[in-house]
Length: 167
Image (cartoon, rainbow, N blue to C red; front, side, top):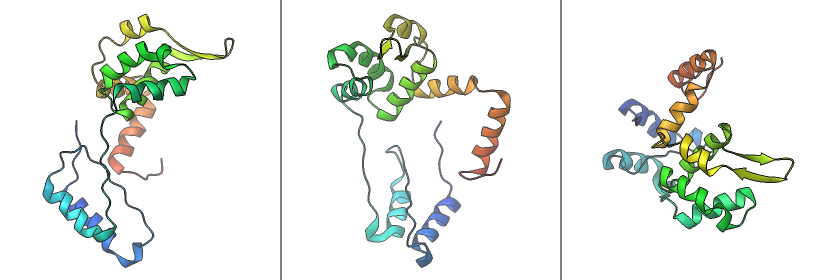
């Protein structure tokens, strides 16, 4: 589910960006590519010449494989089968790939063996254990379900209150 900034939030950001007392504040925003043009223009005009837009594309299969083999200190051909699964589940989105790999590690399908001094993964268990995970939203939802109720309650309040809060 996507979250949209409301008009008053955008007005607040525009005001803060234009405020001369906030000259040493860096504002970073992210959107998934389907931000309405009028909203994007409003934010760009508030930032003036110092607005920089960086478009991130999904990574190619070889790039995801390189990320995985570098992280695991393995040869690319050793991680290719794992990369096929990761790439198919995440469509090359590097942040989703990272979250998916973390989920695999949390579930014990991927890990580091102190005895062997190397990373391991169980492809059969990954295929079987993730057959119902079709997207990263499902992955995040599943991870949230493993949290204790008290932690979930705090996370719900934090999401409501915003980026800073005092539990």
